[in-house]
Length: 163
Image (cartoon, rainbow, N blue to C red; front, side, top):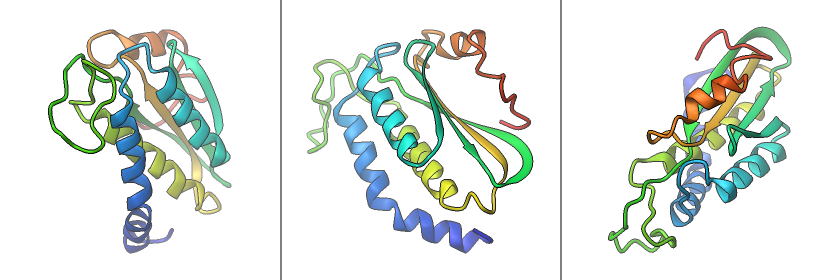
């Protein structure tokens, strides 16, 4: 991708894909440190894109590393995974199927956007300078998922130059 319009075109092209991911995550919410199904979907999608995928960080966290074909910095992008202990009453056809748990804070959208960004960038890795480290963090809603990921070395190997 060489310009903004190409990026916008790719995002529009993947709109239905992104929406289907978001709705799937919304239907199957999981609370902090319990994101088993969620992390499996993320790992599968990133793996299919050819990213180097690591799972089980901070229990359920996922990291995907996309290597560009040119030297450059490491950029870290972070996305939340957990849902909230809230009963959904939206009536949406993609409403939560888990009683008392829902994505009421937008993390379903964060994950779908993160996977779509990984897809778009992986298709252009020949132009990518450096690498992108995609972090899918569990337990953002007050349970300390970020701190545990840091303790487990998420900011190392490779260390991000930008986040």
